[in-house]
Image 1 (spheres, rainbow, N blue to C red):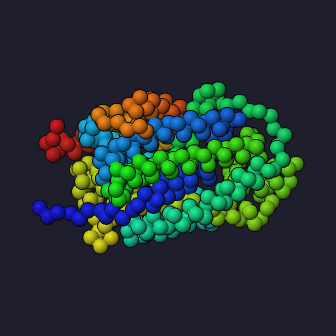
Image 2: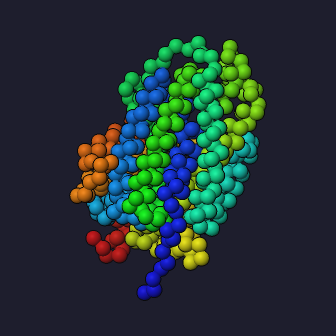
Image 3: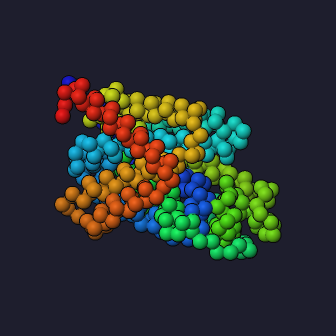
Length: 424
């Protein structure tokens, strides 16, 4: 049997950190703050802290596992090696199905900001273009993500400053919907925004000096993004108030309407130039998240194909560019089908459930490792796994039931395949 080509270790620590930041910022800032505010009310910053703490537990587990298994696949590989093939399959299947939905959501977010009225066509064009970038090699992916982050972060910082400087609205303090459960539901939705550091681990086979660079990149990206989200949560509550924030489809843009006329709700006609800057930043951030999501899904698909849990044809790697071209192309095709057939903005909860289950398995796998580092004590794995499951089952019932149905379908298909192959 001939050796198949491997992926290239072309990414340094800074590039890996940038990929993680670009993934998280694109999802969190422009997608989940309004529904999270609807659930948490004035307790939105507490929900950000809860989501960030669970994300830290998961980041510590992922960082430790990634140094032991610095290859593509993330928790699919970790669960398979530490807990067995079924745990690995559940992690990989949760990640792929949830993140394909996330890809479609990010693509449509780009279309809604960049080409209102033609959002589906713009979303499909973005998927095709960014898949092409991924097929040219991981260094192009990191370079483009770095450029996007360098443009988006200053715009978000500007929004935070403007929001804190604007007059406070005449809105009363609003308690969380359903009390503590509302805060947990908001944290579960916000967790969708913290999942970007997984992209670093799933590309572990392409990072130089992984034992040093992967933990530093994961923790650095998470710390930066948590601080940004916390500042933004306080700023949006300060400028808009909890009720207005909860009902706003584009709260970062609406900040400038409030500044233009503090006495009325946002109408969409204030601060044309700043609003345009936020629109461009939203489109770029969505592209950055989509770029990293496509890369992460493709590499987990590659790992599952290598192990025989997906068709072997998906393990093909380009000898010229060193990328899993078959997995990337199939991922793009599935996302385009979702864009043409589904209202993907309703699947954020679906994706969050899959990601939370994925990280519950990561924490369980990390718990079995004998060697510990200062940033990954064993008790954090217990807290992380339990926290992920609690948050997952506070999500809306339709999201929970939909993802459970997808997981059951995947398990049944794998059982049939194993029976045909004659494997236990």
